Image (cartoon, rainbow, N blue to C red):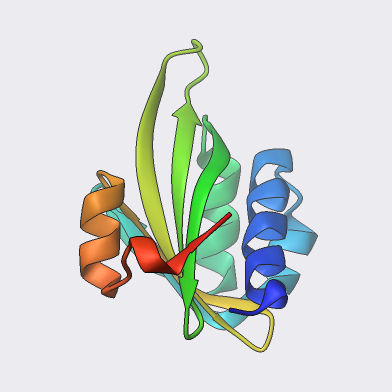
Length: 122
């Protein structure tokens, strides 16, 4: 586990929630890939459009990390205050997010990345 991978992912969440596009882009590789059940995108321009269009906030919860992969359980709150829980799988290389994909739940994110409870960070 490296502290920098966790710090990068947490800073990415902060920038996303603040719609701080400059920081979000600085924390993301040029060819970042991202997606969820509603679609996917690649690159800084797509990331900027996606981040600007979002109407939710994402609060990180439990963290799992191994070999540059970070899974984060997330509380996602919409503009009306309704919330749900999901999880995202991040790939971090040289302190930049190269990919992030949202999964419906923590179990599916862990299964997709082959991380386990043994990889949980307290």
